[in-house]
Every structure is written in structure tokens, then in C-alpha cells.
Length: 226
Image: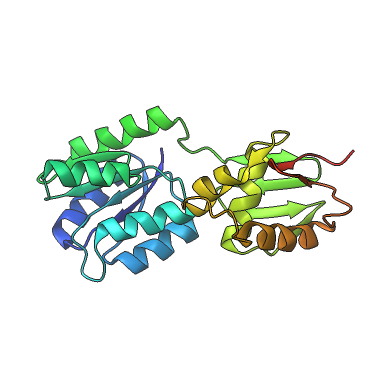
């Protein structure tokens, strides 16, 4: 059983998808617009998203990019658009699977199962623990020594990425690419600002680090305090 979030404005297709997936035991939620869908995906952290491209308030391709800015949830594009160039564009933009309408409920459910087998996270609660730092990737909650930290989206993404690679020095170029989804800007202080905010919340400073250590000229690493 997996949690599935559907963003589809056609009520008949939406009801077919919801019914077919729910009948197979999945937990299914759905929205008809891009912005409501984005908020729902952030709030519920589903195992997989099924996304239409022809949405009334925003093109689904733009929504896909917005999803990718905040989540690595597997995304299946389900659309009537069958242009080969657009399929490649969506896959390059971060989609994991592409299915062209019309499709049956059985085919859609099979694609959900196949995708989740590949990513291997059905029903998983992904947590990272480094020392007294406990990061829940699904609920997007950070707990430090039993206290919940109030972090914004990019602070969470940055700390989670460093924690996923704990002990390794992560180059700034990699942080820009993986956390900000942007090319590296050498003179940009964005990373420094976010690291400063995180250090304050972790009860440390750059001069006296506990978790976050800067390796000058190389990058940043996160380690458990000794």
C-alpha cells in the first residue's frame, strides 16, 4: 500500500484514478488545480504523485518544477500530450514516468507499483539520525535533542542534504545543484546565509561548530558532535 496524490482537473479521469488506486489498497488524495495540488503534496508527503499537464491555473510542467524544488517524490506524468519532444522535456525536468491518455485504471495502478518498486520506498518513513539530530524526510520535521526546530523550506533541504551525506565534504557547487537546482554562483552568499541561520538554530557558530563544519575552499560537511 502506498500514498498517492493525484493532480488532475478532469473530474471523470480523476474519479477513475482515485477509485482504481483506492480499490487496490492505496491511500489516495486528489486536487483539480496546480496550486492546491502543490500545497497538498507538501502537506501530505505522498509516496508518488500523478500529474496532469493541462491544469486550469498553471501548466503541469511548471508545477513539476515547483515540486522538484521542494521534494524528490516520484512523479508520473499522465496526460493527453504525446509529443516525443515534450516527453523528453518532462523527463529531463524531473518526471519519473510518462503515461499518455487514455489509460485504464489497471494500467495506472501497475505503473504506480512498478515505479515504487524501482525507487523502493513504498510506505517507508525516511529518517536520518546524526548525533542528537533527527530528520524525518517525509514529515519534513527536524528534532534536535528532543526539541523540534522551526526551519524554513531551504533550511530543511540544506540540512537534510548534508545529513544524507554526513561525514563527507559536500562542494558548494553540489549544494547549488541539488538543493537550489541552480548552477553555482561563485560570489553568491546564499549558502553562507542559510548555513548561518542553521548554525544559530543548532546552537553553534562558524567559529565553534558542533554539526556543520566548513572546509575552506572545498565545501561543507555535517558530522555528529564529539
